[in-house]
Length: 322
Image: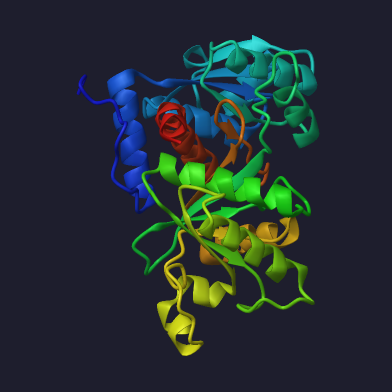
């Protein structure tokens, strides 16, 4: 066990494999420390406690200690097992949690019952935040029945209406996370309503530009094509019927949407209608960031933490290779 460094891994193909790798990383190197900003929320406490029981993380909960203990007690969780630190309000909890990560005390930053704007303001603080100079973007990871691989979708939670420059960084962040999970090189489909370059459609034009940039080596570490409609991005049969010849068509690992509305509906349709197992991370910061919706099921939060454990271990190797 001690000889394992997790520099090279096989591509993860489902959430079961993802969880097994997170367990192995924690078994070899010990649990990762996760700083939770404003932890006074039942699903958050359930998720971090489950991850603690699994040996994946050591949680440091910032917020109102009395409230956190009361919620934990109502859930039947022994508060003696939780490290709880006082913060006078959610914005301060976000600041203290971010500082714990930026100082190296913790490995992962997680959002609890704090407004996303306050959480991100702390994370991007110029003095003690987690800035890298890159755009932050959300990447969803999910498994789908009938497929032999995990899918990645971005960005359905952070960037409202990204321009071309932002889209390129969204692609690069998603590619980085795919590399973290052993998918190298991933196949990236830039999604639009059509699979032809229509000058009347900004999305299709921008997708074609990004695809050509990848062809010229301006975006590395992935095979990229677009515009592609969703059906011919993930179905080889649909691509065949439409006569699309592309190394990505029907074989995409990463799906890039045009704006937050498309991504948000895509994500919630998967969770609520298809009942897929999914997780999500914010990429582009100095450390993995778990930012889930307050309404997300506890399993999404737990699997997001497991993904963050892998990212905390593997990101240095991935950055080293770029």
